[in-house]
Image: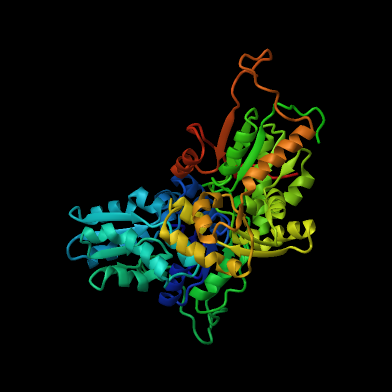
Length: 287
Length: 287
């Protein structure tokens, strides 16, 4: 921890693209006083099928960029990047760095009754085995069943979240998990909570669906509280300069395709008109 | 045209990822004496939904890389990159640069009887309007109907080329084109020829399916012949050093995920074991 960190500094949140906005939204809800700087790597999205080395390099560049915004903490709001890069980046940085995976795993560990937990995620996250590892550390008796679902992200981004085609694909993806008798399913990709209704229908009421976004915000709040890094309470007319203002949310992307703003506007409760494009490849990712 | 260009130098071929291998395969078939250097931008794939500025920047970096391999000509084996970057790169380079779009448009112009031509492609290619522009230049009387099909690439990459789900999605995508009474359909993305059987079934026998990969190789051969740049004929025991050897094919990628080799091996008639990873962001793309 860097001494003298400014408690009113923003929180940095990043994702391969737009999915991480579901995590940002949860932080906004649970910590409305906090400023947020969001980066979506829309020029290089998706991360799901790419290698660990590439994802780690991309993540380091993004962390370098976020540090130029004087963030007090970083949330890797992408399961694939959390799987491949969290461990290295945590060691390299002197501010708190959180991923979404531990939060999801802890929630699943509390939710399961029979110890049989399913994980649906990108190929990168599943192949990394990271959910299995974290869950087994919590309880070596857990049985973990992973399934890569590469079509979910493009289907969500095509807006087919309630389509019978998506339902048919979901049934194929989760068939094996159902045979295994899981009672808890981790939605291990930030896009998947947008399929919650459909997955609820396919899985049935008896399987708990775990959304790591919610729990990540809970974990972040606890960590900032513990470190004395929560933003000062905003008053309607603040005595201190600026504290009466609403929280500031800034959005940066590496590609300014229209899709980011459309999708962002559909996820967030307000318009994200001011999204700014930066050249992420210029950030060295040195540490 | 650089004077004194080596006719035995390789041809550079690039794509956002693996789809361009369908074009490379066609060059190999039609010009078996030619050496090929292929680059697939697997770290930043797909290009289809990204902006013109980003695609142009990526394409310039790749051209810089290919020039370090002393290529005598460059084929942009990606419709989206051809749509966004061909015009600029043609002007900036002193060697022949070909895209896949003109070739596809010319073939479609010859194939159509009623002048009503459909184009299916990525969102980037469709929104660029480039097929429409090239076809109207050929014949202002043509009626062009474009349709973006963003799910086709992930479906092909999931191996669902003969699945009823892909067929259902294809029926939705082409429904409007069928109402318009097209008699010719351009497969305006290098992945789509892998859906030829399914598209034939959906479109019916009376609609001509145009695969730009084939015609691009025809155009390349004509161009190299005209410029005296065809590789010297390879003899079984060449008098000149090296001419008895088979053509050399080298593959480079920006991310070495297993998927590239699996897919490459399924498209090409031999094993591409020697794929090499490079850091494409190090190539400045200056011109």
